[in-house]
Length: 181
Image (cartoon, rainbow, N blue to C red):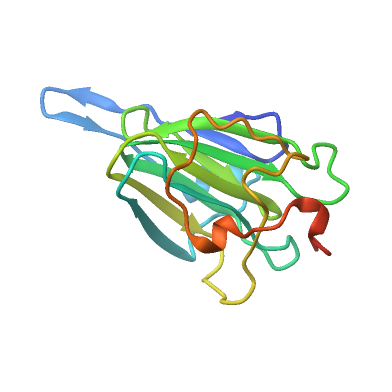
């Protein structure tokens, strides 16, 4: 497992090195010791699975304010997604900056997202599954979000979303969010 820095501090791409043989492959996808050595919060309190039926499904951009937030590890285990992280940590040198990368069952990469960073994705294929590991158990009522098409963030999505929840359609732009802390 290799931790690769991104343009946003503490947001890391994780690359696995599968051992391949005639049977197939085996890959270590998480190791708490490796996370500790990299100085990253260990996302082990809860896991969740997101299944998405259709290409063009958009989820996000979701966050929990940094003070109450959660770190997460996101991995696509079937299909492929364009996964996005947006730095919403006030005072961060990369505040409002975003990174996007393809996560897929084929490349086996994952994205580590620290507290205070928003997350979202659009599916690039039908029948896509995303596996999440969270540092905190779910706490209803803390979730927030910012518009996926906020012009002050200007995420460049590789495809136009065609499926999204009413909640995600109604998320406000960052300029209308009173507090990120």
